[in-house]
Image (cartoon, helix red, strand yellow):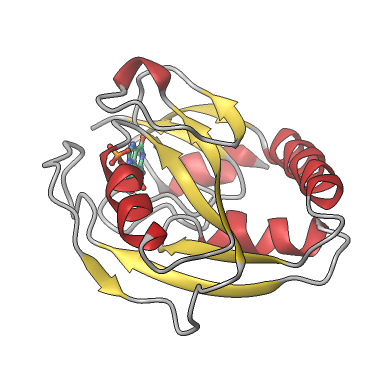
Length: 181
Ligand code: 5GP
């Protein structure tokens, strides 16, 4: 199945994590969240656009009532290098006050984005604030940020698919792949 995408996208190098493995891991994470939030209602805020696919699969695998929202921040644009500059482009629609917020990220690289966001969002007085990321590149970390749930730790390669892009391409791949940049 993956092969057909390699035909369209010539820059794809190799599959890093196949669709079935992602599905199983998302279900495991959702089970853990279902247990951890058994006595409350998590409010899952997806960070656009990269976490969109992960967010929508995750919420459907959680066996609890949940509420959802989105936030958009500036990211790398068409470059693969972080500038460290992060801007909020779209605020969540709902107030965070008193909510058990779970921030849903696609990938934690240097950690700068999340570090900034968490600082801002804490000021909005959520009852609790936790972070879940599908992917983490621990070797790239520049700030010491605590991430509560991690799908996969991956090496320092640029990955696309399952919501993650390179120049706005590749988001629809149902697997994660390494791209030649
Ligand atoms: P950080 O602030 O942790 O350095 O960067 C986080 C953001 O960088 C992610 O939300 C994502 O937009 C982008 N990013 C970091 N590594 C990758 C990668 O390997 N692939 C893609 N597509 N985006 C990445």
